[in-house]
Image (cartoon, rainbow, N blue to C red; front, side):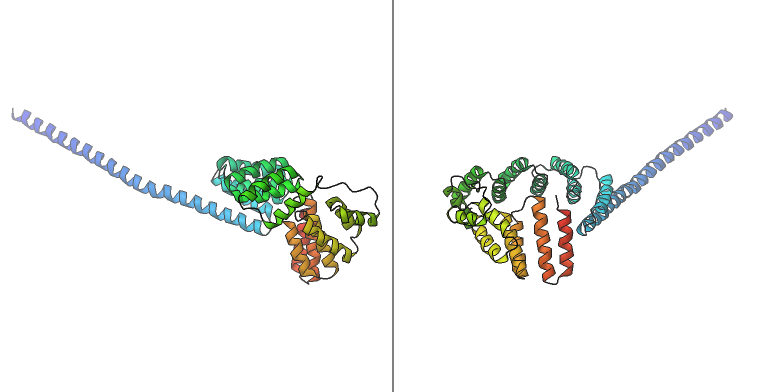
Length: 326
């Protein structure tokens, strides 16, 4: 009997020991899990912060490279950004800007469209798309996008009007000017232009085939046609006095035609009035759409800077002329 009691006590002690061991293991596991969770949260956070930091470094490096004209290097840094953060609209936007600078029109268009899928009403992206379309000679498509911009911001009507005028879509231009006039949003410059367009049945009459400049000048006295004026300016391109006279009149008559600004800038450069030439050429650039015209402006501005003794700006605009030959 005594032996049985002792055996029973031994079994009970073992059970208590086993329970204690199980409880200890349980609490140890809980403690380990708690410690692991506490350690893993900062690790995950640190990893995200590191990725964000790397993204910012690559992105700002891309902006820096773009600012000094290293567009391919900028694209390489943007590729690194894209690997860290896929489908980032800002990265797509920057890709498009750099590809546009490299005249890679298909890629520029593809990336801005990707960005617009993420942010369809982003006004800066839409403006950028308009510039791509105009540069790629898709004027009708550019008008559609510009009309969307007008829906977002009525101030965008001015550029829409300029596109209509460049396209020589005078019916749409007059219609838009009427709307702007009703809203007191039409500048005095465009009010004058509107009157001139309305006065002429056929706004730009085709000049007579007779190339005699005197005949053209006589005709221009009664028929203030841009086509006639352009032929006169081209005929007197080496005569700065007459070129200045007719180009000055041309700016007053046709303020949205970049060619008249270019001719006046050229005349002023001939006369060594380089500061005035730069001012006129900058004003005319606002109305330029075609790349080859833009290139002529940059060449003339390079001559202005050369006349002013500014070698750095001269070289800069020579390079810009090369980039915009179209």
